[in-house]
Amino acid sequence: MLIAIYGSRRQTPHAPQLQSLLHALAVGGAGIAMHPKLYEHLSGELGMSLPGVTVADPYRSPAEADLALSIGGDGTFLRTAAWVAETGTPILGINTGNLGYLSALGIDEAVAHTDYILEGDYIVEPRTLLHVQADGLRGWPYALNEAVVAKEDSASMITASATVGGRALTDYRADGLIVSTPTGSTAYNLSAGGPIVQPSAPCWVITPICAHSLGMRPLVISDDMEISLKVTGRCKVFRLSLDGRSVALPQGTTVTMRRAGFRTNIVQLRCNEFPAVLRSKLMFN
Image (cartoon, rainbow, N blue to C red; front, side, top):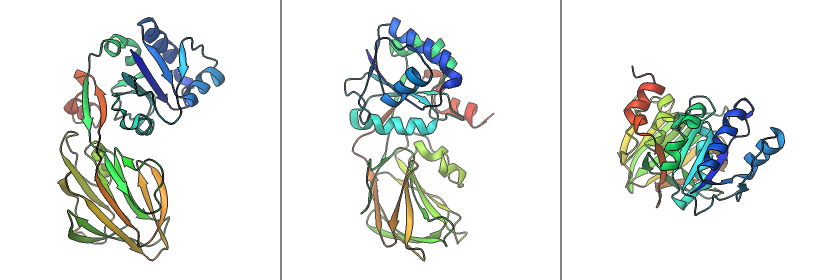
């Protein structure tokens, strides 16, 4: 079994648990390929012994990996999804950050449940992504959580002229507009007043940010619909963000979003399925 590991470089408080986790995985017969930034942090800054751990490509996880571990918070998990990209390798989130909504385990739980990891005793949930296209967009053009068009800094509101499935929808006048996947419904979308969506639901959620009109409410549409947004405003540029990766684009640019041709596979333990996660992490008690 080959395990690819990606992680944030803020692991000082968790060094003993990480050492125990890596040791248990190695003793269990797993090969480990680690992202070079995490490897340098653990071996160099923290002085951790990493026998048998190989250094992976910084841009792509090994295609032959059976499992990827994301060690950090939700931001780290989203970066792990980009690192894994289209390989289909299932990702298990191990939370050493704050909320860790996308993570299946805390770091102490991961050490205690290494046997689940090695034996594959978990559920793999395929999650849809947005494929985003726009002139001037560079880098990985996919979003597991959301794509956001927003005003630049403190500039006046933008207008996002929206087309859905080739038909005109409306002109959103707002500080911005979120197009969320079901996975991202509990992220920025939820903070902006959008609905919580079952992660396996075949839909997108369009949620305005501080809309000029009270009639502009969150909208749920089928994920087989292509969404097109032509963004204009008084400022020369607006901001396009994909899972927090942000770029400034000139006003008048059209941003097109559709379902990606692949999915990200997320690992959940059998005790941590959707209702349980809502109860434990969003206080549905």
